[in-house]
Length: 586
Ligand code: ADP
Figure 1: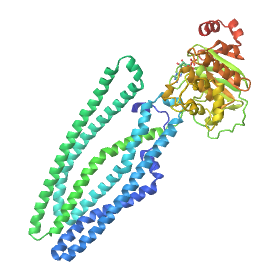
Figure 2: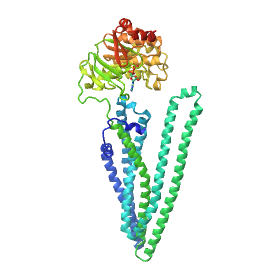
Figure 3: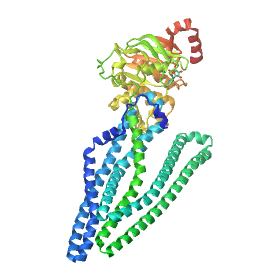
Figure 4: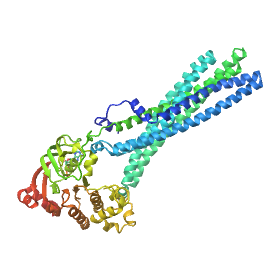
């Protein structure tokens, strides 16, 4: 999956630390606050062994002195506990804030990409970047990172203080540290590999599950459930076995660490006791030293645990950064012109040549000169693959032509902001997309902010009302994901209602190829009739009635306009058109 993103065109060069800074910049105050409290607690933690020494040695000297240090220690612990609580609050909230911001930024970016981006990317991959990668960032930024800083400081401080307590014992301990660190590192690497494998298996199982659940009806009608269940369970079992090995390795590691730390401390304590006996070392100092070696031992263990997490975090940041830094193939002009509305709604193609970015070798469209006039009704006709939909895509600036330009009235469309341009256009695709929202909200997608009356008026004109009457909650009925609850003809009527509601000067309509029911067909005709005369209409026509009603027909073949004229003229002059109409319309 990652390889797909290596193909990303023109992601701006960036460095990971720049991205890290950018991410933390807005939350610098919180991050610094957390750092201050972190430092405070580290200093206090490191001072506690000294306190322990004073308590013990003081007690030996006089009970009151011991007690005095005990009270002081309690006060320090209280400050440290308070500091830790505040650090926890700041850092955890920082993680939560970061994950929300990152998700928002990713969604904003992805939702605005032109189709070329999605031709190279798997939807599942994008969703996983929004969910899984950001969650990783949250868990690391919201805890692991601060733990890593804390443990590194404790480790360094602990070592320094061990030496200041007793150079001899510290040198001994340093010899022992590699014996503890080596297996830790070895097991750490082994564990990371296993974790990675479990995650891959899980991602794999999610892919299989979503694909099969998406197609559950097909699975059932083909009696494929048993096979699908087996396939899923194989992956899940595999992931379980990997986890089992990981848990076992971890248990062995825990055993080893406890044993090694215990043996090391016993050895050092034994050597230290000899020094106490000979009077070179007080019992309090020995206690202080032991506590420091414990601090160092524990922090080493914690650092090795966080290491894997942090490398995953950097990987996740990298994947997020790739998207945030990707430059869209169709960019807004730096200084867009402001359209004077209402526009006339004429469209001109000038020396336009276009090939799809993913199929550079084939010319998908070659239109040297075409003018569609204000309020004209034009039908595009041609075999499948002739380039009709491509014309619509270029007009809406979903792709830019490779050569030439397209004008809206007198303005090249790449000088207008995409938002402004698309405001002037209503588009009814052949397979309209219905969202898991109510009927009314689905129609309102055409014009956010339209009143209920306006929506209902459009619904009436598009003959949506006729089937809404039979729905349980009328306009408030939720249509189900991908509009599973209604037929194709009904979906197209909803899309037409959207277009009518949008009330733009230009209407692009891709008629459904499948035979529509009479009501839906009538809805399309009504919609066109209703807006005819005061809108520029371009229809990809599959119906005789549509071509007959058109002012002009453009007959497309292999990306070129072969012929144009009225239906009668084309029947007379173009054999291919005649044949096509006989096949398609009758
Ligand atoms: P029509 O709408 O007339 O059936 P299209 O405009 O959809 O035809 O397609 C014109 C040609 O471009 C076809 O050969 C089709 O395979 C190709 N095509 C369409 N979309 C893409 C795409 N996103 N990437 C590459 N080629 C495409």
